[in-house]
Image (cartoon, rainbow, N blue to C red; front, top):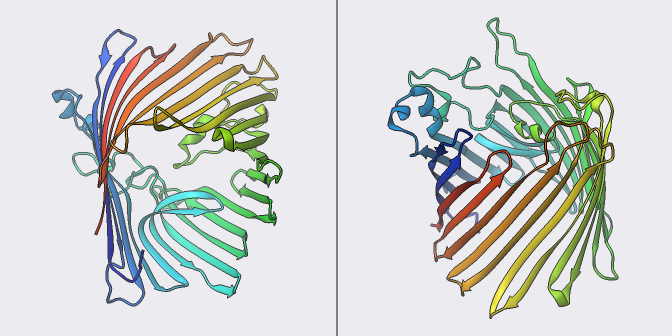
Length: 449
């Protein structure tokens, strides 16, 4: 793309979903959800300016037409079923090649992970030598916290008041910086971030979290690559994340062997809801081997891992006991592309199992994931299917019964010149929820101007 010319890209996606879910009281939940998303990119939006000025905006509207009319008029329900969320709304100005100023709602990657804020970010990228570059970042803004901000309609009730006592900024104020050095293919990255809570009645702002992180990556040999990162949480007075990864491309059969070790001490803030699924501190190690077999047009993969969970540092106190728990797991899979009936097929599968060494502290889990995709009509109709199965056995001292969850999906994809139509039918069943059926229809399009 020529940055000197005005260029506009518009991408839209329309999604409809229908659900039939049987509740425990034998009634059925019939959701009829609709969402419409629009993303717009504009490069060199004001050509008369020195340098370049780019804009990017992305927003979503969601609604549930399955909600009864009397509930739709309820102000407490209305904010949940009819929502307008702005994901990105930013202006980026680059007066010279080595300086970029970004303002608005934006995503920011760094050695401490990805964050989204409503604020400003200044990035300097000087070139120190022909093969040596550097960068320095500084930013400040209000943490978005999953779309809750003044430009998201679901932050306010019908009277124009904030929904919760924290107001329109539950994420607080986040400031930070990032600096790094790139020499050839090697990089060094240092980062600092601090989030303060919204001011209380007396105007005081408590520190929500403060972290310092570093990361390195590069090739120590033309066939060996390494990467490592670590972060220190000042509020916990502990290293909350550390890892080391090594990858080797061996020359005999052109396979790839990867090894790694990691340490996790989960913590919670406004943007870490996913820690709910991995809230126990642990140390672990893993190994992965990928082997391409050209005659079979298949890449095989094998994985193995082990983890030691420290119950004494379990911040969430989920009842794991005072003893450490250890788990071992492994899996194998393939990615195959082959021709059959005059068509190009793609088949991917992976099966894995994990079991607890201390059977009193945990159980065992088995997972199977398999997907198949092929064109039924060349370049006009694509068939896709997927199956997911999970079975779990509890520990010996648990009163929970064994159980499983299963998902089967069948869909068709119709490509077009300027978009893609996708229709999917999904069936789900589990020992806890019982069976339910979902139907999806989506259309995505992209236009360049």
